[in-house]
Image (cartoon, rainbow, N blue to C red; front, top):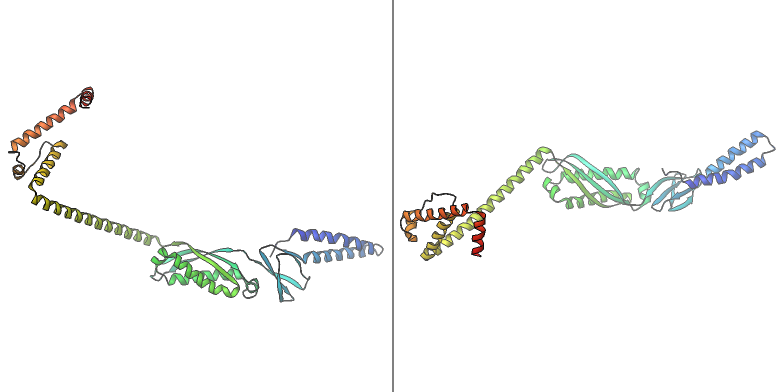
Length: 314
């Protein structure tokens, strides 16, 4: 029901005052009882006339019945109805309306119970059919949306609902629009707002995703090792055909190991010494000792001496 318009109250007093005055003038000589009946008549007439005055807002249509028969739509703006004969049974809102609905504990095609929340955007295109073809079109739209949502969930897999929501939305819109079209209602869009799954299933899906990431990491590591092995094989072929390059590489590896200075014990195969022409192991020991002493001297040198040496080098 539409709320009382302030203009109806104003119209009531505007009509009641002159009617009351006219009744008082007519029945002033007939006694107090006649004046009382005249006031009652003025009150009834003013109430009926003010009640027959209606105003529909810009986005509304009023459905008027006369003696039970549909006579037409009124509004927007002011209009009058015949007292006792006409009545406004519906005020139809023509704006876009949003309705939220959900389906709880509904099984998907792969038997997973889910709770789905969605939002429906719709508007009335034909107010006459919305008023006459269905008892309560708002409730009917809500129930039709819920049953359509359950139907779509039962035909969909959980993965499709989580990844392909646009497809589910389009299917829902098609089904709901097909059902509400006969009521003069047009569905603009349907959007799934949230899909809730059981906590145990969430943990299982999380573990599955973690295992999939670990598998991908191992595959990437294996591919990397394969590429490194291919490069080593290519380098081995280069060293095989170029002994000088192998000699320089061996000397560089030995130099890097001695330069690190993290350990005083270095194991070098005798065959490597022969290929590098560095003599026996005593030569390697002497070389290691000399580099260790130079490193200790550099560490024990005062900061001023280091600054002086560095400036002298510059």
